[in-house]
Image (cartoon, rainbow, N blue to C red; front, side, top):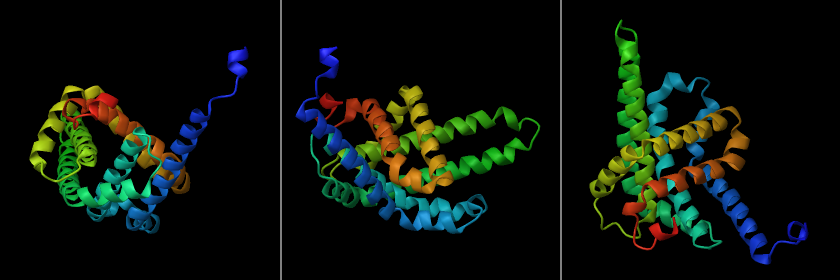
Length: 230
Protein backbone atom coordinates (compact mmCIF):
# COMPACT_ATOMS: atom_id res chain seq x y z
CA UNK A 1 0.00 0.00 0.00
CA UNK A 2 2.84 2.41 0.81
CA UNK A 3 4.37 1.73 -2.59
CA UNK A 4 1.06 2.55 -4.30
CA UNK A 5 0.60 5.77 -2.34
CA UNK A 6 4.18 6.91 -2.78
CA UNK A 7 4.43 9.95 -5.12
CA UNK A 8 5.84 9.31 -8.56
CA UNK A 9 9.33 10.45 -9.38
CA UNK A 10 9.96 13.80 -11.01
CA UNK A 11 11.07 12.09 -14.22
CA UNK A 12 7.66 10.42 -14.51
CA UNK A 13 5.82 13.74 -14.34
CA UNK A 14 8.20 15.27 -16.85
CA UNK A 15 7.68 12.37 -19.26
CA UNK A 16 3.89 12.59 -18.98
CA UNK A 17 3.95 16.35 -19.52
CA UNK A 18 6.32 15.98 -22.49
CA UNK A 19 4.09 13.34 -24.06
CA UNK A 20 0.89 15.38 -23.64
CA UNK A 21 2.62 18.53 -24.91
CA UNK A 22 3.96 16.74 -27.99
CA UNK A 23 0.56 15.25 -28.76
CA UNK A 24 -1.35 18.52 -28.48
CA UNK A 25 1.15 20.59 -30.47
CA UNK A 26 1.41 17.89 -33.14
CA UNK A 27 -2.37 17.98 -33.49
CA UNK A 28 -2.24 21.74 -34.06
CA UNK A 29 0.54 21.39 -36.64
CA UNK A 30 -1.35 18.63 -38.44
CA UNK A 31 -4.44 20.84 -38.51
CA UNK A 32 -2.48 23.71 -40.03
CA UNK A 33 -0.76 21.49 -42.60
CA UNK A 34 -4.03 19.84 -43.67
CA UNK A 35 -6.19 22.98 -43.37
CA UNK A 36 -7.27 23.05 -47.06
CA UNK A 37 -8.44 19.43 -46.89
CA UNK A 38 -10.30 19.98 -43.61
CA UNK A 39 -11.93 23.15 -44.99
CA UNK A 40 -13.07 21.30 -48.12
CA UNK A 41 -14.52 18.48 -46.02
CA UNK A 42 -16.42 21.03 -43.95
CA UNK A 43 -17.83 22.80 -47.02
CA UNK A 44 -18.74 19.87 -49.28
CA UNK A 45 -21.83 18.02 -48.11
CA UNK A 46 -21.14 14.77 -49.93
CA UNK A 47 -17.38 14.11 -50.22
CA UNK A 48 -17.95 10.72 -51.86
CA UNK A 49 -19.58 12.40 -54.84
CA UNK A 50 -16.35 14.39 -55.37
CA UNK A 51 -13.90 11.65 -54.45
CA UNK A 52 -11.36 12.39 -57.25
CA UNK A 53 -10.98 15.93 -55.93
CA UNK A 54 -10.52 14.75 -52.36
CA UNK A 55 -8.16 11.97 -53.42
CA UNK A 56 -5.90 14.61 -54.99
CA UNK A 57 -6.29 17.04 -52.09
CA UNK A 58 -5.48 14.32 -49.57
CA UNK A 59 -1.87 14.48 -50.79
CA UNK A 60 -1.41 17.28 -48.26
CA UNK A 61 -1.50 14.58 -45.57
CA UNK A 62 1.70 12.93 -46.83
CA UNK A 63 4.33 15.46 -45.67
CA UNK A 64 2.21 16.23 -42.60
CA UNK A 65 2.36 12.57 -41.56
CA UNK A 66 6.12 12.41 -42.04
CA UNK A 67 6.40 15.50 -39.83
CA UNK A 68 4.22 13.90 -37.15
CA UNK A 69 6.21 10.65 -37.32
CA UNK A 70 9.43 12.64 -36.93
CA UNK A 71 7.96 14.25 -33.77
CA UNK A 72 7.12 10.83 -32.37
CA UNK A 73 10.67 9.63 -33.06
CA UNK A 74 12.12 12.65 -31.27
CA UNK A 75 9.77 12.02 -28.34
CA UNK A 76 11.09 8.47 -28.07
CA UNK A 77 14.60 9.92 -27.88
CA UNK A 78 13.61 12.13 -24.95
CA UNK A 79 13.28 15.42 -26.82
CA UNK A 80 10.53 17.89 -25.96
CA UNK A 81 10.84 19.81 -29.23
CA UNK A 82 7.88 19.61 -31.58
CA UNK A 83 7.96 22.37 -34.18
CA UNK A 84 11.53 21.78 -35.36
CA UNK A 85 11.17 17.98 -35.81
CA UNK A 86 7.80 18.46 -37.52
CA UNK A 87 9.22 20.99 -39.95
CA UNK A 88 12.34 18.90 -40.60
CA UNK A 89 10.28 15.80 -41.34
CA UNK A 90 7.86 17.83 -43.46
CA UNK A 91 10.53 19.62 -45.48
CA UNK A 92 12.99 16.78 -46.05
CA UNK A 93 10.44 14.19 -47.14
CA UNK A 94 7.88 16.46 -48.83
CA UNK A 95 8.69 15.58 -52.44
CA UNK A 96 9.10 11.83 -52.03
CA UNK A 97 6.17 11.52 -49.63
CA UNK A 98 3.92 13.24 -52.16
CA UNK A 99 5.02 10.76 -54.84
CA UNK A 100 4.33 7.80 -52.57
CA UNK A 101 0.95 9.16 -51.51
CA UNK A 102 -0.09 9.97 -55.09
CA UNK A 103 0.82 6.46 -56.25
CA UNK A 104 -1.03 4.92 -53.30
CA UNK A 105 -4.10 7.10 -53.82
CA UNK A 106 -4.20 6.19 -57.51
CA UNK A 107 -3.89 2.47 -56.72
CA UNK A 108 -6.61 2.57 -54.06
CA UNK A 109 -8.88 4.56 -56.38
CA UNK A 110 -8.48 2.03 -59.18
CA UNK A 111 -9.12 -0.85 -56.79
CA UNK A 112 -12.22 0.85 -55.38
CA UNK A 113 -13.65 1.56 -58.83
CA UNK A 114 -12.97 -2.02 -59.93
CA UNK A 115 -14.58 -3.38 -56.76
CA UNK A 116 -17.72 -1.34 -57.35
CA UNK A 117 -17.83 -2.42 -60.99
CA UNK A 118 -17.43 -6.15 -60.36
CA UNK A 119 -19.74 -6.12 -57.32
CA UNK A 120 -22.68 -5.62 -59.67
CA UNK A 121 -21.98 -8.82 -61.56
CA UNK A 122 -23.10 -12.30 -60.57
CA UNK A 123 -19.60 -13.45 -59.62
CA UNK A 124 -18.42 -10.05 -58.38
CA UNK A 125 -19.00 -10.49 -54.61
CA UNK A 126 -16.43 -13.29 -54.58
CA UNK A 127 -13.76 -10.84 -55.81
CA UNK A 128 -14.61 -7.94 -53.50
CA UNK A 129 -12.48 -9.36 -50.61
CA UNK A 130 -9.51 -9.45 -52.98
CA UNK A 131 -9.87 -5.76 -53.85
CA UNK A 132 -10.37 -4.85 -50.18
CA UNK A 133 -7.26 -6.78 -49.14
CA UNK A 134 -5.18 -5.24 -51.92
CA UNK A 135 -6.34 -1.73 -50.97
CA UNK A 136 -5.49 -2.36 -47.31
CA UNK A 137 -2.04 -3.59 -48.32
CA UNK A 138 -1.45 -0.44 -50.36
CA UNK A 139 -2.53 1.81 -47.49
CA UNK A 140 -0.30 -0.04 -45.01
CA UNK A 141 2.67 0.09 -47.42
CA UNK A 142 2.21 3.84 -47.97
CA UNK A 143 2.12 4.50 -44.22
CA UNK A 144 5.18 2.29 -43.71
CA UNK A 145 7.09 4.16 -46.43
CA UNK A 146 6.18 7.51 -44.85
CA UNK A 147 7.38 6.26 -41.46
CA UNK A 148 10.64 5.12 -43.05
CA UNK A 149 11.04 8.48 -44.80
CA UNK A 150 10.63 10.20 -41.44
CA UNK A 151 13.63 8.21 -40.15
CA UNK A 152 15.87 9.22 -43.06
CA UNK A 153 18.23 12.09 -42.33
CA UNK A 154 19.10 12.61 -45.99
CA UNK A 155 17.71 11.82 -49.42
CA UNK A 156 20.56 9.60 -50.62
CA UNK A 157 18.48 6.41 -50.56
CA UNK A 158 16.38 5.87 -53.67
CA UNK A 159 12.64 5.82 -53.19
CA UNK A 160 12.15 2.39 -54.71
CA UNK A 161 14.74 1.00 -52.28
CA UNK A 162 12.47 2.17 -49.48
CA UNK A 163 9.18 1.02 -50.98
CA UNK A 164 10.26 -2.56 -51.73
CA UNK A 165 11.19 -3.55 -48.15
CA UNK A 166 8.05 -1.82 -46.88
CA UNK A 167 5.88 -3.93 -49.17
CA UNK A 168 7.66 -7.11 -48.12
CA UNK A 169 7.58 -6.43 -44.37
CA UNK A 170 3.97 -5.26 -44.41
CA UNK A 171 2.89 -8.39 -46.27
CA UNK A 172 4.98 -10.53 -43.93
CA UNK A 173 3.30 -9.13 -40.83
CA UNK A 174 -0.11 -8.61 -42.39
CA UNK A 175 -1.94 -8.85 -39.08
CA UNK A 176 -0.16 -5.74 -37.78
CA UNK A 177 -0.81 -4.00 -41.09
CA UNK A 178 -4.51 -4.85 -40.78
CA UNK A 179 -4.53 -3.38 -37.26
CA UNK A 180 -2.92 -0.19 -38.58
CA UNK A 181 -5.52 0.13 -41.33
CA UNK A 182 -8.29 -0.34 -38.76
CA UNK A 183 -6.82 2.39 -36.53
CA UNK A 184 -6.44 4.74 -39.50
CA UNK A 185 -10.06 4.05 -40.47
CA UNK A 186 -11.11 4.89 -36.91
CA UNK A 187 -9.14 8.13 -37.04
CA UNK A 188 -10.77 9.16 -40.33
CA UNK A 189 -14.23 8.25 -39.02
CA UNK A 190 -13.75 10.29 -35.86
CA UNK A 191 -12.46 13.31 -37.80
CA UNK A 192 -15.44 13.17 -40.18
CA UNK A 193 -18.02 12.74 -37.41
CA UNK A 194 -16.47 14.91 -34.68
CA UNK A 195 -13.91 17.19 -36.37
CA UNK A 196 -12.89 19.18 -33.28
CA UNK A 197 -12.44 16.13 -31.04
CA UNK A 198 -10.83 14.10 -33.80
CA UNK A 199 -8.32 16.71 -34.98
CA UNK A 200 -7.39 18.39 -31.70
CA UNK A 201 -7.51 15.45 -29.27
CA UNK A 202 -7.55 11.97 -30.76
CA UNK A 203 -5.48 12.41 -33.92
CA UNK A 204 -2.02 12.19 -32.30
CA UNK A 205 -2.74 9.20 -30.00
CA UNK A 206 -4.14 7.18 -32.89
CA UNK A 207 -1.31 8.16 -35.23
CA UNK A 208 1.23 7.36 -32.53
CA UNK A 209 -0.24 3.87 -32.23
CA UNK A 210 0.04 3.44 -36.00
CA UNK A 211 3.60 4.78 -36.01
CA UNK A 212 4.75 2.54 -33.14
CA UNK A 213 3.27 -0.55 -34.79
CA UNK A 214 4.77 0.38 -38.14
CA UNK A 215 8.15 0.97 -36.57
CA UNK A 216 8.05 -2.51 -35.09
CA UNK A 217 7.23 -3.93 -38.51
CA UNK A 218 10.09 -1.97 -40.11
CA UNK A 219 12.64 -2.83 -37.42
CA UNK A 220 14.88 -4.86 -39.82
CA UNK A 221 15.38 -1.88 -42.17
CA UNK A 222 15.43 1.04 -39.75
CA UNK A 223 18.63 3.12 -39.60
CA UNK A 224 21.30 1.81 -37.24
CA UNK A 225 20.60 2.64 -33.63
CA UNK A 226 16.90 3.17 -34.27
CA UNK A 227 15.73 -0.41 -34.31
CA UNK A 228 17.36 -1.00 -30.96
CA UNK A 229 15.01 1.50 -29.36
CA UNK A 230 11.90 0.01 -30.97
